[in-house]
Amino acid sequence: MTEIRVPTLGESVTEATIGRWFKKAGEAVAVDEPLVELETDKVTIEVPAPSAGVLGEIVAKDGETVAVGALLGQINDGAAGAAKPAAVAAAPAAAKPAAAAPAPAPAAKAAPSDAPLAPSVRKLSAESGVDASTVPGSGKDGRVTKGDMLAAIEKAASAPTPVNQPAAAVQVRAPSPADDAAREERVKMTRLRQTIARRLKDVQNTAAMLTTFNEVDMTNVMALRSQYKDVFEKKHGTKLGFMGFFTKACVQALKDIPAVNAEIDGSDLIFKNYYHVGIAVGTDKGLVVPVVRDCDQKSISDIEKAISDFGRRARDGQLKIDEMQGGTFTITNGGIYGSLMSTPILNAPQSGILGMHKIQQRPMVVGSEVKARPMMYLALSYDHRIIDGREAVLFLVRVKECIEDPERLLLGV
Image 1 (cartoon, rainbow, N blue to C red):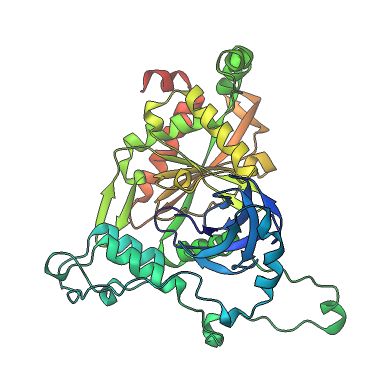
Image 2: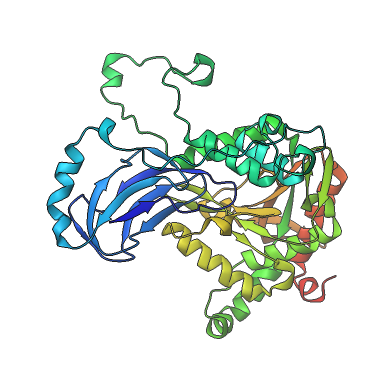
């Protein structure tokens, strides 16, 4: 018999929700065949069969929340196990041993010290809601380590959820009239959608978010793209879009205005001398933001390849958790859906996000003449706690200059 357990889901991810099982108890499975879909607060992943055999008891049912390492089910060796699942499943849950063997009692730890918490500990505490001051520390002088926090978070995640939650913790709407209620459909929010809702609201509650706008003349970059798109695709195997240009323009602007590439950590400001740009991708299950790392070291073709790959795998639900972590700045393009103007919300803990929009022909004064020009509105939402208005405006002006004169991107000026 082989156990099926929740795999390690990535840093700071401690639990998942069972999306659906692809197999039923009693069905044969092949090694590495997808067995069950897990929804985390970042991505949806598939757990493959660790061995071949017959799927035995399914311990964690659809919709249940499970912690990392929790038992999901088991695979019985050979076809002999095919007749067993029904009998096993019929057994009362109370008669079954716990899904995961209880961990050995930890050795006594020193009481939490008054020493400053490490940045990693503060970050885990903020993300999980677990108060670091309540966690026994195993480090020097009783300090709380990252390992202590991860263990505390996993323990909290595996604890049973209270049946009766306080009224203040649950948002309840007024009941609909009977004739309307009969025509409503109630669907449980996915874990990803719940996390999107919570994080966006957290940003509004914590960041001093403002948005500044500008517009960019796309004439030159569109002409450049039109001239080279065929030879570019033939050589690099990917289409030449606008995202590569905007990503490189943002990197140049981030170098010039480093506050936009910073974040707040407690009472400290962390200025990042690397440029990991998140690219927002819309999927059927919600918005995800895969990260193109070290964009300052990548060419436009490298960036376009990465974005194309991320977009395809995001829509297929095949992104990995670590591919959506560590971003320092985000770009979102509402223009692909026809948006003319919007105010994007920050992707915490980042301090800036650029919104691109629809390209539209508008009359512009060029020299002494009025001409039709392909124009795009740009929006920079930023955290005013870190970024001053002057810096935000200069950042957008820098992006505008690079796009209107794309040769600057090649020269880095």
